[in-house]
Amino acid sequence: MTGNAISRMPARKGAGRPNAEEAERKAAALIEAALEEFASRGFRGASLRTIAAKADISTRTLYNRYPDKVALFAACLEASSAQLRRASSEPDLVAQSAQGTGLAGELIAHVVAVMGQLSQERSRQIAALLYREGAEFAEVREIARLQFERYQVDPIVEIMRRHGLDGPTIRDEATQFVAMAFGEWQRRLLFGGPPMSLAEMEQQAELVVGIFLNGVACRQSPPPAPEVTRS
Image (cartoon, rainbow, N blue to C red; front, top):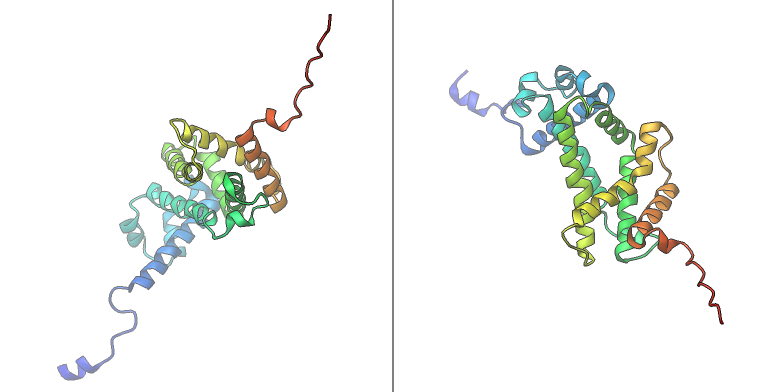
């Protein structure tokens, strides 16, 4: 076969480096395979070789992208946590809230959206992994802490600042709000119970936002005025 004939032959399908779309698809498939493996077998039991096989890549390719299990788990948690931000950034979330616009409405809408994402089976499995193995693996615990700050606390800080609330304690206040807002979801995860229904999420969000903005005392009837004794 002459050189000219060779040059006229069509390129072999799949030859060469993958294009951007194919590379993105393979990266997403790797994260999905890793999430499935971590969710089903935990951090300790997860096998990088199994993950590579499920993603249809070589272990060498996996290690070129993620040097160890910690790096891959961090990428998985980043991808999973980023869904929380996307869930709370959907258009018209505030308008969908029963409380209408304003700080209370935006907080309620945010909590309901994020709680819905956290209540999905995969999210519950990963959260259970963090509670179960975080004490054993310091790296896992640190990854979870960073994701908590970035994807749960930071959005609340942003919402508060948009409505004119700021100050040196704003992050502490936002952290306490998150602890209250997702406390019932956490209780069911740790002690058993079905995922929360949408009605339960809305009720929980309204209760927590009311307490956070007004305090418990403001939700109660004021005490009766003392009687005046006339001499």
